[in-house]
Length: 315
Image 1: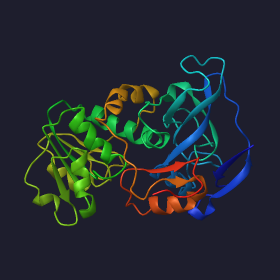
Image 2: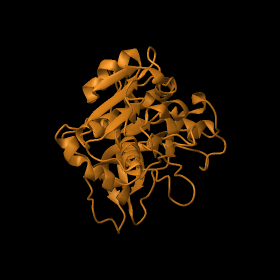
Image 3: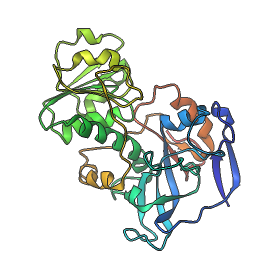
Image 4: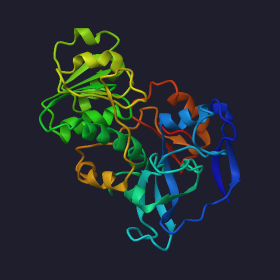
């Protein structure tokens, strides 16, 4: 048996409870059994919990992102061995059927081998766990937009989990000619440190007051009904929320694959891309309700991470 956080009914964060007798799953032929060392929280985790119409059976152990160590594997697994340090997003949202009931807020989780990658040696488990879903989402938006090297991009929500990676990818992977990102007053210097050439404080500046037009508007917060005006004529407007609030915007989802993570390994190993964990620090497995409370405020900078090895919150 193992410790795990679960909910048996949909609702607010208070429906979550920690149990000590959740069964340890057995990996299928193409799956790994991973001992989770760290996990990350994403908005999809609380949105599924709050939505009775979610395509997932109860009870649910929430969590998509994790980093840990392979402790067992199915007979058909070829790429990984017991003892390998891996990370990934375990929920393939485009797979047929319902989502997995057993997420990453548990001590052990099973995951298909093609959904994970080997953890870069220079990243801690906590840093690695913060990346998969946000990185896969950020990458997909550029692909859908057909974004080319050297173009300009306006990022809406540059301080968030996805937005902080969009800024970095635009500048350090695509070598964008101009990266401008919106943020709150407190995050202006932060988004500049990620590679933004300009930061627009949305508490002080409206979209209409921004002088430039851009080759891509990449909206990570669902404000495309307003942000679209910063796109050049016929330039793409990407919105990662469903449904987009503007008919001109194109919805960009996520491709869940370990190959995406492997592709960006060189950028992570060289520091061109870095994991961003909120300054509040890393939460312990016992502090899930508190962590979700903060996540649901919408004020998180980067990602919130849960470390399974901590006994209490570490700043």
